[in-house]
Amino acid sequence: MKNYRVSAENKISLRELDPADRSEFLGDKDQAEAEVKHITRELDDLQERLYAEGKRAMLFVIQAPDTGGKDGTIRHVFGNLNPQGCRVASFKAPSATELAHDYLWRIHAAMPRRGEIGIFNRSHYEDVLVVRVHNLVPREVWEKRYAQINAFEKMLTEEGTTIVKFFLHISKEEQKERLLARVADPTKHWKFNPADLKERALWDEYQRAYEDVLNKTSTAYAPWYVIPANRKWYRNVIVARIAHQTLKDLDPQYPETNIDFSNIAIE
Amino acid sequence: MKNYRVSAENKISLRELDPADRSEFLGDKDQAEAEVKHITRELDDLQERLYAEGKRAMLFVIQAPDTGGKDGTIRHVFGNLNPQGCRVASFKAPSATELAHDYLWRIHAAMPRRGEIGIFNRSHYEDVLVVRVHNLVPREVWEKRYAQINAFEKMLTEEGTTIVKFFLHISKEEQKERLLARVADPTKHWKFNPADLKERALWDEYQRAYEDVLNKTSTAYAPWYVIPANRKWYRNVIVARIAHQTLKDLDPQYPETNIDFSNIAIE
Image 1: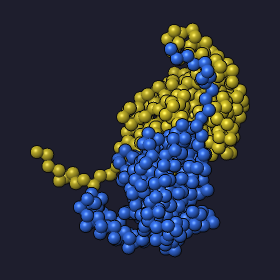
Image 2 (image 1 turned 60 degrees about the vertical axis):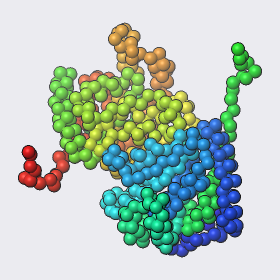
Image 3 (image 1 turned 90 degrees about the vertical axis):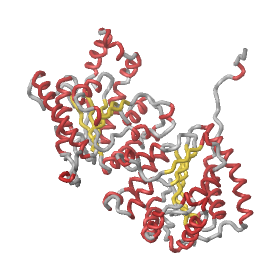
Image 4 (image 1 turned 45 degrees about the vertical axis):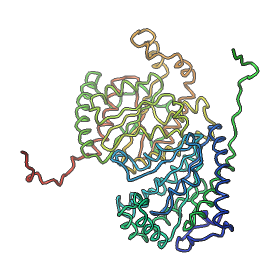
């Protein structure tokens, strides 16, 4: 997956990354779905160990353009986890209470506890995406945020939270088809927001803002992966593999106990 | 108050700072109390403006050895503020929920909203004080925290919170007298904690840890003041003056409104 990982040595231009790329999984859709199913069982076991160990937390951040597949990824890749140890936080437009604080306040409050896997559906990155594209704060405020976010994520990782960030990369044409599908399908009307069309008109501005996010905030301790996401099954299997590998590398262990079980009387 | 402000150019050694110093207020106890009373009325007005303006927050952090006077300072200097716009947060030994997160998590959650004055009775600095002195985490964890705290406070100030930090500096002899007073006075028994005596045995280790806090985390954006605190009235008048000057410098303004009041009909 190294090709998809953004780093100081691997700065990216979204224009040059094919959202329909499938070079990292040679099988077809059925084979991908079978592998995702297998991985979700492994993830469940790893999560239980992480929870039992209780020393470290895991955070997956998911960002994407509208219709990019955030909800679908969470459902298909992480939907099988025990909700006891899994905390999904969705960040909508901030409330008055949230706006009354700095932009990281609500993010910090939603962080997974040690032992938990947290999944952020949108995140603090909106504060350098929508906020930037719509000039909701002046440039001199948002341009400081990349460094603030890196410092924040550095502290989190130093204190025991592993962070991996996914950008679901779709083409403008794919977005058009998905919006048309929502319009055509009454069961998807709830997902259709007329404001999405206004956002779509700002596609290029958003792509530039995403590029800055990816190139400025993909760090050794909290990397971004750009996931080719035009094909949902390909997106799912790649995200599942990265999540799986990350948790395997963490290698969480059931804790030792110093209780003398030979000495416990059960009356 | 420049003498009491710690900075890169004014690193301090607590041993060389007289906790009974009174060079910045030439009057006596009665005069000091009159001035504090006067300042608390001004603070009340400034707080109302800050609240009405609703754009910026103010945070005062108070740290001190046991019996150093944190509660008394809050009561005498800030006790007159409208509780609507004033948020005191006391940080005790962290709960299980709090310990399950990074050490700044509970701090961030307790930050004052824009328009509010927040007062921290103890703070994140405990995580490089008691935590360090008692080896509650390894050195390689706590020694990273100074930089983490500076980055955190930098973000907060860049996002609109003014931060001023007070260290109430008492002598070991003064602490002894105050502990004896608690033992002798049944109305103060609730404040007496036998564990304080164990902490007192670690006086020198704490002083070294405080010095590192003061010298490593007094920044241009979030300065520490070392307040000579053997005399309570002197401590109060100095803290009141610094708080007052800080809020006057902020110069909060009642907001403009674009409602056309000439056009409001009251039926």
